[in-house]
Amino acid sequence: MPQRTALVIDDEPDITTYLETLLSDAGWTVKAANSSAAGLALFEQTRPDVVVLDIMMPERGGLSTLVAIRKHAQLGRTPVVLLTGVQEHLTADYRAFLDRVKSHRADAFLEKPVDPPRLLKTLDEVTGKK
Image 1 (cartoon, one colour):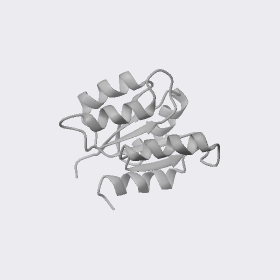
Image 2: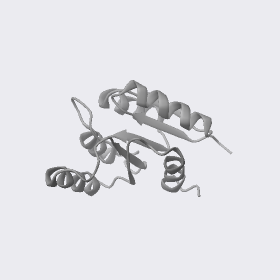
Image 3: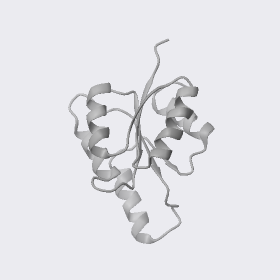
Image 4: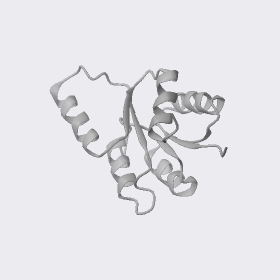
């Protein structure tokens, strides 16, 4: 069976290293970027099976990156799993932000710290391997 590829985009190097290790140990080929610009370039180059994307990043944030992915002519249907370190029980403004993110058709949404079994199950679900 061909190995699946995941692209991890998170501005925190510790998080990308952790996710690279977790996913590699689970049999994934993993590419990682610590900025949206680098992530979008890798997205074009690697044509991943799934993108794991942090919402809150400096410069171009995760929402803008998700919109760019969805607008891509050939790869716009690539599954995207959004991650956030901010808990959903915060302000109404943050809930409105999450609603906007969800309206851009993310395939799944997980909070940090990431629960490894839940992330792996979610990746299987969004890539069609159950």
